[in-house]
Amino acid sequence: MTDSNAPSGPTPYEQFGGHEFFVRLVHAFYVRVAVDPVMRPMYPDQDLGPAEDRLRLFLEQYWGGPTTYSDERGHPRLRMRHADFAIDAVAREHWLAHMHDALLEQGLPQEDAVTLWNYFVGAAHAMQNIPDELPPGATPVAQS
Ligand code: HEM
Image (tube, rainbow, N blue to C red; front, side, top):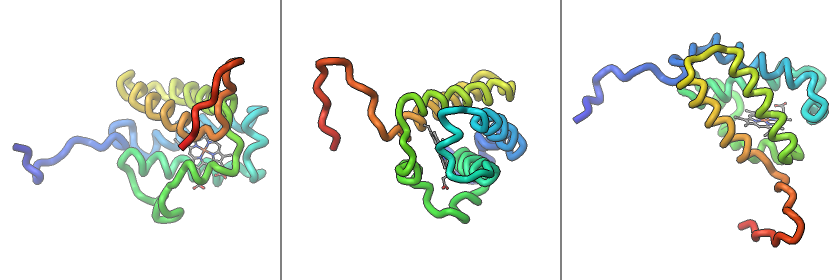
C-alpha cells in the first residue's frame, strides 16, 4: 500500500536542479540557435529572449515545476504551435544537436541526462511536420 500522505520524492524539476538548471540549459540551447543557419531564420522575432522564456517555462512545467507556462499561454498544444514552421528532418536534427550540446554542458548525472535526452528525441520527432524523403521506389503510407 502506498500512503498518499507520505512525503514523495523530489520532482524531476527539483532533481535536475530547479529553475537555475532550466535557465542554464535553455540559454545554452538558444546561444546555439542564434547562430544556426537553418534554425535562426525560422524565428519570427529579432529578439530570441521571449522564445527562450517560452521554452524554459514549458520545460519547467513539463518536469513538475511551476505551471507559469499554461497560466500565461494556455494548453501547450505544441504540435499546433509549430504548424507554421516548416520542420523537416534537417531542422529536427539541428534542434536536437543544439539541445544535446546544451545538455552535456550542464554536467548532470548520466541517468538524469539520459532521461531528458530521451524525452527531447521523442518530442523533436513529434514536432517534425514535413515527412522524411522516401527512398526511391517506396510507397508513401497514408497519414490518418
Ligand atoms: C524539432 C525541431 C523544432 C524546431 C525547428 C522548433 C522551432 C520553433 C520555433 C521557430 C518557435 C517559435 C519561437 C517563438 O516562440 O517565438 C518554437 C516555439 C516553441 N517551441 Fe519549438 N521547435 C522544435 C522543437 C521543439 C521541441 C522538441 C520542443 C519541446 C520539447 C519545443 C518547444 C517549443 C515551445 C514551448 C515554443 C513556444 C510555444 C508558444 O508558447 O508559443 N520545440 N519552436
